[in-house]
Length: 41
Image 1: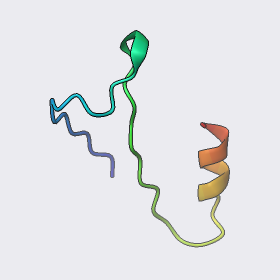
Image 2 (image 1 turned 90 degrees about the horizontal axis):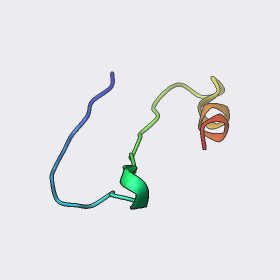
Image 3 (image 1 turned 45 degrees about the vertical axis):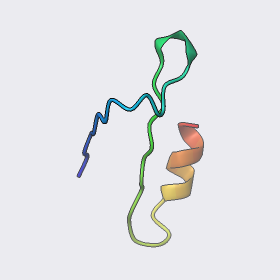
Image 4 (image 1 turned 30 degrees about the vertical axis):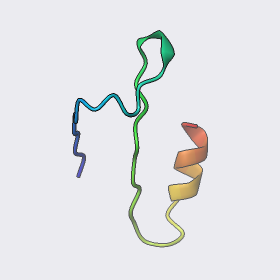
């Protein structure tokens, strides 16, 4: 499931028009969650 929320509070905004995202990765153990996060960070 993927959900987006726009609170219009200004929180999460970064310079140059980019926006920070908070992502929660949930799943079983030993399936590659940490590897996925490292690949996209």
